Figure 1 (cartoon, rainbow, N blue to C red):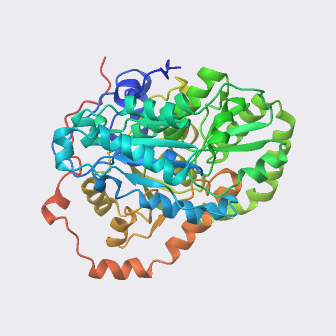
Figure 2: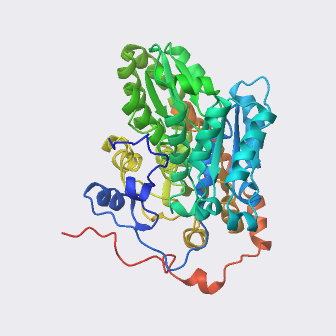
Length: 495
C-alpha cells in the first residue's frame, strides 16, 4: 500500500503517486503486461483536443453530501458545470430513498481580473462567512480553480481560520485543472479532504456496517446486504457529515468503481483498519463470485454468501443463457473511465459479445492499496481473454470518431454524456447508462443484456440520423491512422 500523507493539505497527483498514463494504443493484454513488469510509459500527443477538469470530479465527491456547502474559488465560469450535480441530486435521490431532496448549496467567489492582480484572499474569507450565515451547513468545502492556484491564494490558511471561528469543518480541496492530466486526480483531492478533515476515530466498531464508495446509482445493496445481515453506509452522495465521520467504524469498504474510490478505501484501511475489498467490483460472473466471497471472508459470512450465490445462479442463469444465444458474436465498442470501462468489457464478454476495442480515459497500473488483485483490467484479461484495439486517451474524441468510422460495431457502449452522439452519427446503435449499479451481479447481466438487445434491435433512428448528420471531422482525418498524433512506440516491452 502507498503511504498516504493525510497531514498534507494537497494530494499527490496520480501521474506521480501511481504512475498513471493517458496515452497508449495496443491490446489490453499488452497494457497489463507493461504495467506488471514496470515498463509502462506514457505516450504524449502532439495534438490534444480536450481534457476533463479535476475540479468537476472533486466537486462530485462533496456537492451531493446532504448537509454541506461548496464554494468554487475562482471565476464564476469555473462553477458553470456544477449545476448538473444539483440536477443529479434531485433526480437520483428518489432512487436512493430520500424523502426530500433539498437544493444544493453551490457558491462561487467570482474572481475577476482585478482579483487576479491583487489577490482573492479577502474575497474567499468573506464568502465563507456569508455562506455559513446563509446555510448553516455542517461543513463547507472550498474547491480551488486554476485562477486561485496561479495567483497563490492562501486557501488552506483562510479555511483554518474560518473553521476555528465558525466551529464547523472548512475543507480546502486543491484540484486546479492544470495540476494533472489524469482527470480522476480530482476524486483523490476530494476524498483526501474528506479523509483528513471529516472522518473521526471510531467510538465503537460496527461489525455489520459496510462503507460503499460510489456515485449515485440506485440502491441495490439494501436488498443484497439484507440477505447477508449487513448494512450499507454510502459514501459520499446522499450521506450526511455525521455518516461520513463514522465511516471509520465500518467493518469493510467496497467500491463500485476503483477509479473513484481507491484513495478513500486505502485511507480508511491505513488510518483506521477498515479493510478494503481489493478485488474488482462484481461485474461478470467470475468477478461477482470472487467479490462476494471476499466480502464473506472479511465479515465472517462465508456460508451466507455461498447460499446467496446459489440462489442468484438459480434465479438468473437461465435468462443469462438466453441472452448469450441472442447476442453471441455481436460486436461492440466501449468508451468510459478506466475501472468502469473494464467492467463494461467484462459484461460484454460474459454475454458472448466481441469487443472490437475500447477508448478508456486513463490507466492506473496499480491503485493506492498496491495490490495486484485490484487491477480491474487484469481480471478482464484473465477471465475472458484479450481485448484488441485498446486505446488509452483522455477524452480525445477525434481518435474515437476515427476508430468508430473504421470498426463500425453493432453497438457503442458509453459511460459519459456526449459520447454516444458519435456512434449515432455513424448509424451505430449507442447506449449510455448512468447508473453504475445497473450491471452489477447476476441480475445486472440480465438488465444490461436486455438493454443492449433492445438498443441493437431498435436502430431506425440512428440509421436515419446517419443519412442527415454532418460530421465535423474531414475526410482527410478519417483516412488517417487514428493514432497519428500519439507519440512513438514507447509502450513496447523491452529487455
